[in-house]
Image (spheres, rainbow, N blue to C red):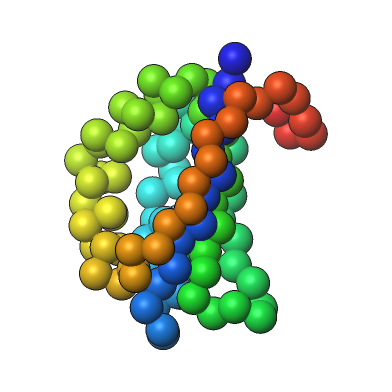
Length: 99
């Protein structure tokens, strides 16, 4: 059964676009790592929050992706621009458009 992750993060003022660029910089390799869907979203009314939706072949694929050197480097670049306020929800994906 596919594994889903839904989360949000808050950035320091003026840093949202830089963090979005970091989040999107490695999308080319995600499918090879087992990612079926990776969507980054922002709001026109809130300039510090980023939402991320992911669907992976399995939780193990997601966990393994977090250990990749390029993922760890991206996290290291983004962390100084984040406030530490995160939300997350793990879900079991049961279907939908695009899957």
